[in-house]
Length: 260
Image 1 (cartoon, one colour):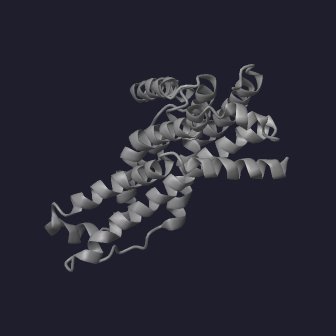
Image 2: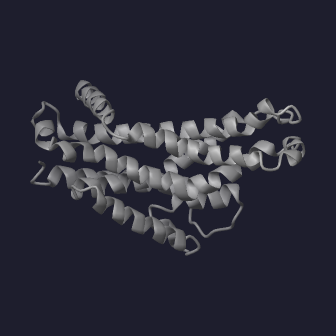
Image 3: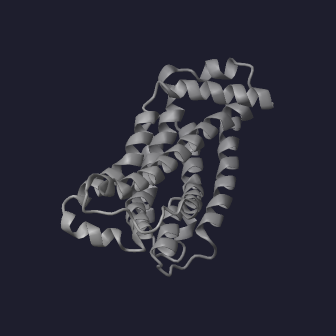
């Protein structure tokens, strides 16, 4: 089983090269840092004071993740899941895949693993983009010194890991929808509708029931210090919801009669 799982992951990773996932990961990770970096040069005279602030890195982190947690990351996750699952649909490769000597759990988990790894790449690249956007002006402008404090990598890595778990329910639900509806637009349309609903319901006492809210809730509670009614840590809830939705997604996949 382990050897079969390894072969399945490698196969899915190779097939991914024929999709737009690499460009999506790179573009999603660089979009917000590029905008913030360019915006720094609109008020060069104010930059020395900004870079002398001891809270420079935490303030930049909060600024960057506002757009990422609420907008870019959920959208990117939905697109990544759709792109990976649509590889077989575009090439009519489901029958060929199921004819291979691979058990259904290996096929199911291999695609899911590739998606999760791509999202990890996206978040890691985004954290690197925050560092580049922060240190960049100090490297190109003689009047701007480096930040007074070092980049808090361990702290930021922990928060990035939390956001990674926060969006895992989106992965599971979009994966479920993509396996159920073998089209590109239907799962994406449902996901966009639920994501828009989650934004409007963020202050609703039961917003934690919507799998698309956890990154926003985590950001608002931890980074923005907003008191929101959540029965537990959003990341903990997200981990439990991901586990349940993944089991449901596998049941939908394994019990489907027409797997071609």
